[in-house]
Image (tube, rainbow, N blue to C red; front, top):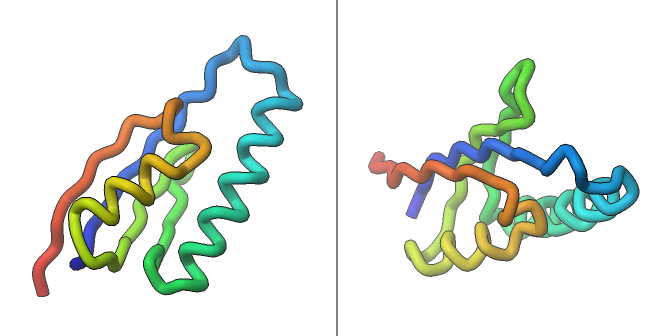
Amino acid sequence: MLFHVRMDVNIPLDMPVEKANEIKAVEKAYSQELQQQGKWRHIWRITGQYSNISIFDVESNEELHSILQGLPLYPYMNIEVMALNR
C-alpha cells in the first residue's frame, strides 16, 4: 500500500539544543533504515519549513501507523496521511 504523508515538525522552543540534536540524530538513523528497507520510498523537504512530503510503501494501515509512531520526532509532529492508488 502506498501512502502520501506530510510531516510538519514543531520542536518546542524551550527544548535544549543538545536534546533536540540527539532526537534528530536518532530520527535520521531510523528513517535511513526504513529507506534501505524500501518502506520509506521518497522524501522531499518543503522549502522554508521544517516539513516534508514522503511516500511510504507498507503492507497495511497498521504498519504505517507503527512506523510513524516510532519516529523520535513523532510527539512534535503534525501528520497528514493520504492513501494512494495506482
